[in-house]
Length: 281
Ligand code: KIV
Image 1 (cartoon, protein in one colour):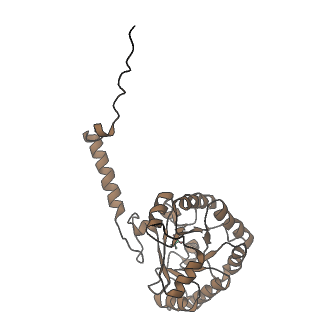
Image 2 (image 1 turned 90 degrees about the horizontal axis):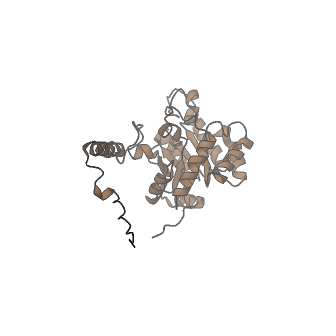
């Protein structure tokens, strides 16, 4: 049975009804099709692709052109879920006008329906500018990987007695600013679960957690972690399959069969065409 397309207003209804929202990253058409078929509400073309697809140590190097390219592939593969295009580092921090142009590219050239950006209070004007041109924006606060150098690594944010005193209050202010600026949802990454619960209760827009505990309105995972394709998974991630082992096993079997002469067999080959009869006169 064809499932109904998910829309941005559906997510607000889900929060109001206490229904949990799911988001998973995808970076190409094949995985977008499969993850969409599994029934998630949101497909995130995350800038995590810099790390899990491109092999960088941080999310910083991926470009807007590359994000547009991958978003286009994901948009081709999905039928039902909302496609969220992540604005990469450097494509929105210069000015709200730059952010609007980058968001338009992700929508117009990439086929994204919504965009995501990192930052709270200091990004409020930018979120407002993008929503003013009718592109729905998802915020992202807490551990914001594009700020890795300021944070001194990928660290949990907003701990009461953490390395950054006052971080808890600041995160609450960030969440409220993102909502007031017009975002339709906000990712809470790597923050204590009681703070995530407090933010979730205070906001009218859905919170989507990753390493933020069970009280968020939804959860997001990086597909390579969920599927067991990454070489390591953060403490807050969970592997639901071990596809890396399957990839190695299947490929090794192919290599062995080619070397041993078991593949290809006659079943995989084409017979030569029968000779064409020539009329001898
Ligand atoms: O880029 C990404 O995959 C993300 C998620 C971790 C939320 O931003």
